[in-house]
Length: 261
Image (cartoon, rainbow, N blue to C red; front, top):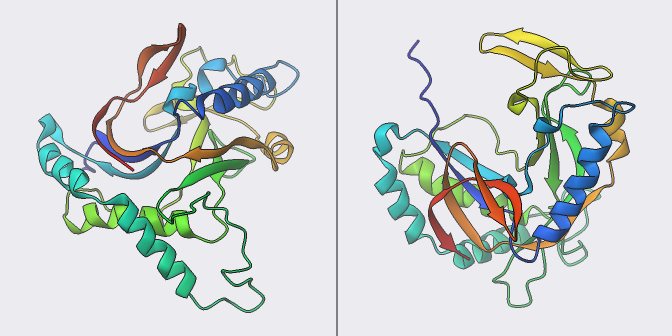
């Protein structure tokens, strides 16, 4: 089998803005203090993601030596996000409700305030594990999307790049999530994890896994941030870089192209 292309860039909705940074920073700081405590999970601090890295991934690209990046950038700049959102809302409104499901007129407006039907905001709630919670290495927060408008919007954006054959087709449903913890970033020596944490050796080396069931239950109703406005869609380069925001050290992915909402 041919080797899987190495990912170099990704398409995303950045979640951090001037209006959302304070909410997200406070939530992540409290979460970090909890999960890194020795009497809690004792997870190394490196595993908790910096606030500036938070985003919703829509797809992944492989552009060796940036070959193909120009084409993806042109596609991104050609997008009309408000028109795509309006189309997504129309399709959701026209969808036949399942038995027992609320109609669109009764459902809560969880895809964000939009008096003109042309804006979108995101609320992050809850906590889930990417693998089985009894032995996982990644935890993420969910965007609230009871009506499915955000999902439909993101799938339409993603489809543009898939149809143009510039994005890797992962042949699986799009899972919208904001990663808040990933042990792949832990640089400390094996054996430094706390309660329930242990190292598992895989083909790419050692990975810290832990039992996330207590923490997932504890954060089931956690609101990480409410009403974060979607301001842009971006193509970012893999590998977060150190930045400074208002005198505070942070990390962020470099956006090589973006289109404003």
